[in-house]
Image 1 (cartoon, rainbow over the protein chains, first blue to last red):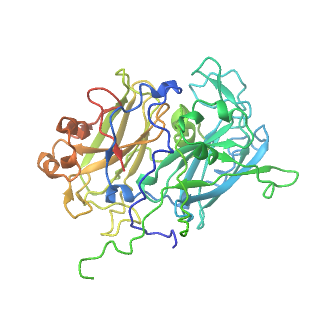
Image 2 (tube, rainbow over the protein chains, first blue to last red):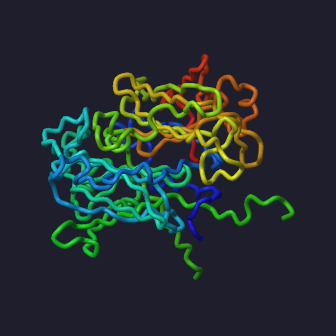
Image 3 (tube, each protein chain N blue to C red):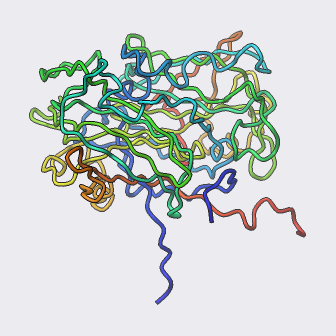
Length: 246
Length: 205
């Protein structure tokens, strides 16, 4: 089985027990933004099993290098140099080729480059904090960045986010669309984060924590973290799209 | 003992957070010079695109009646003939001048989003019955833990809507209008209510 295009099967039903529910009062903003009625179940139709495919032509040379993609010529972002790499897979364990992966993060001091950001940590003039790439034929992706800092946020009076990187992923169908966050192995802030704790399943939380990967660490240069992302699986179509009597 | 199925589990969703713009629409938030343009921004229809021009606009509104000013909305739709510009579209070839996907951040003051697009054609349901013209929407924001999936149908398609296989299965008929964009000339208005009496129908797809 190969996740080559085109595939036309429907997606595995989403197991919502390991996703955060909409209403999570420990994360206060969810209270007024959580739909309160039951979702209406709808098996995927053409409208959901299809999705946009982005060409490699949208990707600029430095889109996957956050250390330099916003820096002045000859300068670099400040912080611990890391590489984040892994695979986009689906639930069948098959690599998702050609998936657009977008990522964004705070700088090494925990400050985002955003109009509405007011944290007192310094802005790094050489760090934009975002990038993107498209997975190769086996679903692999990689980018270079600096390790983001933890930062405080207005929720509880003393809530802090663990170091994290946001990911937005397109699979092959619009029903696979996913936004999630990657955390770093060994961070004591993970267990006390109200946003992490919206996820009800301990194992599902662990699957968002990237391990330090010394095998891919580049000596005297940068450490590696490995982060695999799993999208919904797709049914085989052995007995679908066949007219009666075939 | 049986053979293990060995399926992986989908990665858990996490909120897009307040700074989704940095990653998805950096130019919109004033971070220029890295991407030429924000992906999915600007008119979805070019001069060569076939179909009737419309503008879809609306807001995402929270349980207090306040529009979200940090939401991001994506739409996905068929072309004027009902074909998707996707490798998984096997019925025919979509209009090469229509990508069918758009992304718009809510305005940071008014909360309004808009898409300059075309009205989609009819797409068949899985059993072959026609679905009324519709666009698929995906909504993320701070405070939304997992992206919300919904559809917008068109108020000028009353007859097709009445037979639509998805709309007709909705038990509480009083909720159906939450999925209908109100057309006035070229403008189709579609407000998305996260809570309350007019809470929009969201789908588990």
